[in-house]
Image (cartoon, rainbow, N blue to C red; front, side):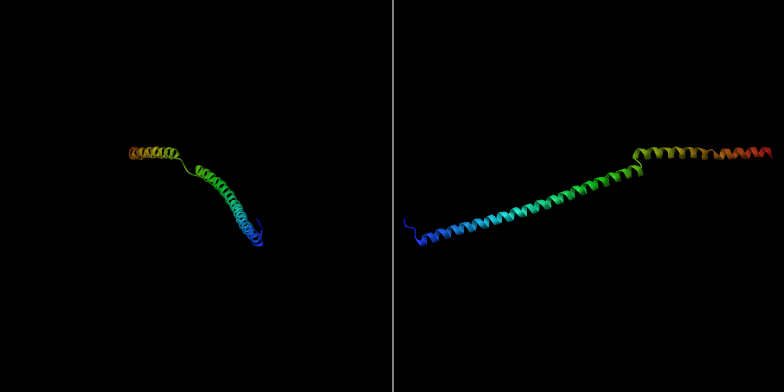
Length: 114
């Protein structure tokens, strides 16, 4: 088999096309890797920010829970307070209901002295 100039040129052309295609594919792979790396770094930064926000919100929630526990009353505490107030009102009602008898007694005693 004789190698002619046309055959050698054709082989070199085919090798050039294959090498060019390979070079383009390698370039596309490198660009995809770079983009993926950049996206991964951006995702890591966002994740760190989310973790920081979560920690800050956890602290704020704990502070709010403490504030609520210190400031507001519980249901059991409210019941106890209500019972104390109602007991006081009943005692006052009892005192007021016997007040007319006391006044009559005082007036009757004053009437005897006069």
